[in-house]
Length: 470
Image (tube, rainbow, N blue to C red; front, side):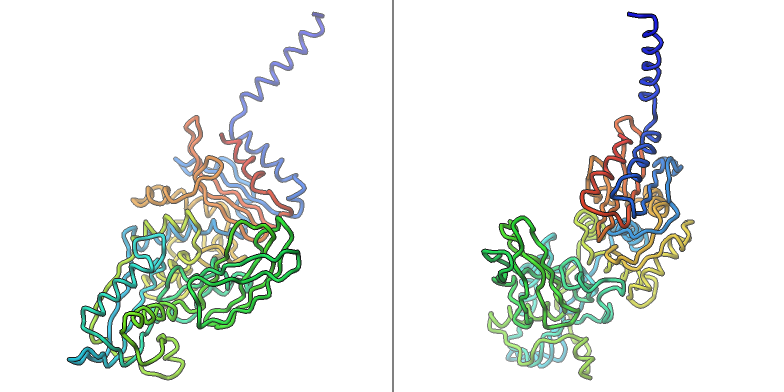
């Protein structure tokens, strides 16, 4: 070995030692800088905020004060607000009642009324109160009263949430599909139904609509769906406005696609709920003389809504903690919008999205978060108009750790890339927000967001940035 080679080895040794000695935050900064120079982010804006989860001290921040579209990471704020104001044990109640009176021979001279309180879980397959369970409960309650015939109608009472089902910031492409299902004072089956499809044999052929589950006899479905190339998958969208009765199925359904159906949004959940009860009663011989209706439709027609004579059944929802689990785990947009309207009611206001947002902003302002850092349009993040800073999201996550409901909240976070983080994705927006404890025992709060990126596969690159903390 030459004498000249010894210093070279020493230099390499010190360089290697320096690299080994780099802290996770130094590695994170390097990884983030690499991400920012990636061709996919040439026209994008990104932000990263990492806090010490124990102290709330910022460890690395970049563009942390710039408001960005959040997609579904907004749900972590909605859930934390609802748990704080409503309490983790909060529950909704749906009541079955009747108006008028029951004759000695079992004729109800009045209406059967389903009174909604906004419960977004009624009839959902995720919980005990599934569709068949609820209908069985109601049928048994009707039978117990001795009713054998209804000289009136089955009415869905959806008044508690008003008539505007979707936030103003939602797009036309989203609203007719399951993830764009709006709220209702009387929600039912998470306000969605399935459409079973079959691709044609060649690209451009008409894709066949086989059936809906359940059957939707009151809805006109117009199929304009085409067959897409092999491997193109599901690019099918249902265009159906709230309270509408004509839907258009558009887009493509790829050859060889493995899934068999898409899910659409029920245009009038209160009507559908009442329809299912009336239909079930009819099958059992308990007939109504008037067609199904809702309190909204009755108000439009100038019909009086009679006072309730007797309540005959009450169905209680799961707790808010249980609802939050699926809200974050499976990103159910309906739950977030329902939570906002419930927050508005709790604060003594009308059950509107705007009043729910106002309640939310005031709550966090009292905890030191600038209202201007929370430009919130909805409760789920589906609106592309939301603009929230990563620092504000991180601050909410930090403060949530102090609450008695935090265990349930943390449990609801999905696991991605070995981290407990909520994802968010809408057009050209990808974000993650949550918690991570490294193998060395360092506890972090992480919020990363990129808007207006190009191409696909961006999440892997976001994970590469976050991997620096491992």
